[in-house]
Amino acid sequence: MLRHPHTRYSRLYVYYLDRLSLPHFDHADFIGLWIEDEHAVLFFHSNQDRLVADICHRSGAQIIYQADLDYQDWEAGVAIGSFNTKTLAVRPVWEQFPPGNKNRREIVLDPGVIFGSGFHPTTRLCLETLELVMLESGRKVRRVADLGTGTGLLAIAAAKLGVEKITAIDNNPLACQVARNNVVMNRCDAQVEVLQHDLTTGFPDLGGYDLVIANLYKALLVELFVDPSFWKAGMYLISGIIPAMEGDLLEALPQKGIRFLHRANCEIWRLWLLSPGGREDA
Ligand SMILES: C[S@@+](CC[C@H](N)C(=O)[O-])C[C@H]1O[C@@H](n2cnc3c(N)ncnc32)[C@H](O)[C@@H]1O
Image 1 (tube, helix red, strand yellow):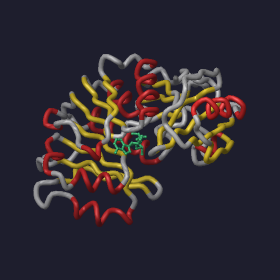
Image 2 (cartoon, helix red, strand yellow):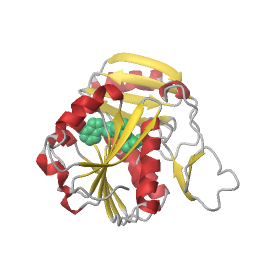
Image 3 (tube, helix red, strand yellow):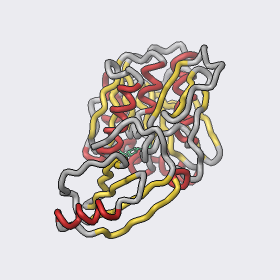
């Protein structure tokens, strides 16, 4: 049901319904359906009280909460726009690439209502460290797993930086739709596969992967860290860490053999680049 790409985001009209099973509907201003536990959350560009009332009437669903807000408020007060890293130029679909980016690899993104516009420090740290690994470390990175891909930005960036095969995973069906659309829009579909999967129920065999990217929340990181089979890949780019979490995350790491290759920080956020093999620093 996702209409893509959206070329304007101004206000968001959000309706929380008390059930998942809804009749088919379509509307030009429909942004997407977000599933949260047993609730369906509908996002529109415009007020759709009448349409949603009709959906409720046909399905027996009830609206349990509704809100309208500025897109910028949804994005934590940040105005999403174009930005550059050392070698990448990223722009949302509603902007043109500014001149002077000839030497950068371009990424066009429709972030929708999904995390991963590139404006959050946790994502930006991942992008910058990915560039460091790909372009300055001298390491061969052919296969990457992007755990919690969101908009797919990091998976697309990996593809643009030369990674041959990227597995991008998210448990949010809307994130997977948004990521797939972004992958196609950036012509990376031969390299990037997007899978809907809940990492709390397990993860793919990471044995063949050179790099795992995980910009996730603490409880899930701890769950992954304490599983010995998580540590089969070559390197781990771990983001989403604040200082208060570091003690618990360090404790969850395997007792032996994990080496810190690189640390970076931005505002309160920390990123770790780890290697289970005790290799040289990046
Ligand atoms: C902080 S966002 C990171 C998005 C993007 N990778 C970035 O760096 O901007 C975390 C993502 O992990 C996903 N996620 C959270 N819990 C998950 C789970 N149990 N299994 C798979 N994905 C999960 C969320 O849906 C969200 O898209």
